[in-house]
Amino acid sequence: MAEPADLLVVGAGPGGYVAAARAAQLGREVTLVERGGSEGGIGGSCLHVGCIPSKALIELADAFHRSTSSSQPGLTVSGANFDLVAFQGWKAEVVGTLAKGVEGLLDGRRVRRLAGELRFAGPARAVVASAGEPARFIDFRQVIVATGSRPVFPPGLQPDGRRVLSSTDVLALSELPGSVAVVGAGYIGLELGTALAKLGVRVTVIEALDRILPGFDSDLTRPVQRRLEALGVELRLGSRVRAFEGEEVLLDEQEGEGRIEAERLLVAVGRRPNTDELGLEALGISLEPGGTIAVDDSMRASDTVAAIGDVTAGPALAHRASAQAIVAAEALCGLPAVFDPLSVPEVVFTDPELAAVGMTATQARAAGLEVDELKLPASANGRAATLAATDGLTKVVLERSNGRVAGVQIAGPHASELAAGAGLAVEMMATAEDVLATIHPHPTLSEGMHSALEPARRTPVG
Image (cartoon, rainbow, N blue to C red):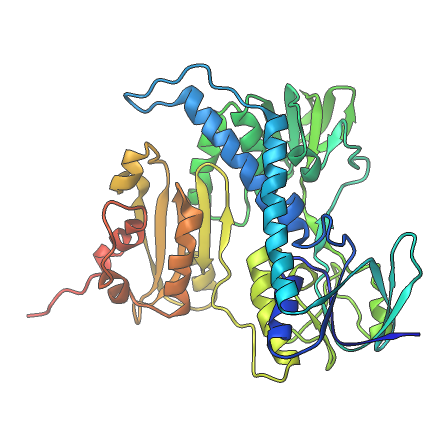
């Protein structure tokens, strides 16, 4: 016998659990299916093997590195060390506490949870299979697909958990290798590569393109590249891995063949949406190239099907999935809701951190806007100076006709924490005068945007 479900949500990551909670808040009876169940599933990859564990490792590595190589006058530290076994125990506690918080939210909203692999078996039917238990059939009225994404691995570079590692494997290490080659200079590869280098691992980054972090302007990535080089990280740009034999990585490079000695290989070259095993054709849904689901501005793929997060086209970001989740839940509940942000903040936890909201000057000009780009080096910020972290900058893109803030890009300490304020300025269509009229506390890093805009202050005429 099939079980009835009013609203079915597939996936309990930062998109799925937020959608389930919001729909339940609006009075829907919600069934949430997560293949990982309560053990390792609620909260999704971001909580268990991504965002949270990686930032925990980054903080450990940064604290250790600063304690052993600080250039801060007046500070001397001796005997600093780290214990990865203890770290793994603490990390598990942090993840467990946050997961229980999500479970408490869902329980408080009376969201029914099922564990197992889901596959659609008809326009309004799904089957959930769980090891050791009979399959359960669910007849639903509406469904939100929020199954996230998984890492992509090139042929011959599939992780084995020993020599060839995924990001998940690295975050679970209780003992560090002496050397690691990182395949991919995107945000995952550089975040983990930087952390490993700060913990004393000899790191080489291999990237097929001729630059790191191709989604960011080069003047933002230059401070990151300088820092990598200062940490002893070797960059092999314009290179591809041909094979990993023993403890030697064989490369195809622009100048010919290359070789790198490395005990381990970390593969971090991208992700793909988890849509290929859901049986979406049973819903009448066809996939776009790349495996994403086409949706409208209310996140609907059809009258009864919505999709959010990494299974839709766009950056694979937890906060984007959560924002889309609210829209999808409200739209399926009959409320007017659209996903139409002026910006989706992008942050990278490298050293220095990077943040970008809205349009770059290049993007604005391509869209036909006349803009000015105002820059302030981090060396002009008093708080950055006290942190001994002055390699970076703040850039503000202003529309010339009306002075509106069209975009902000930051490279510097705690840039991730500054992204929300910059994003608010973009979303509220604030002008330079609006920002300048807002008193910013001193000395803080938040002054960077205010100071960058000083040249745009209006001058009385006559």
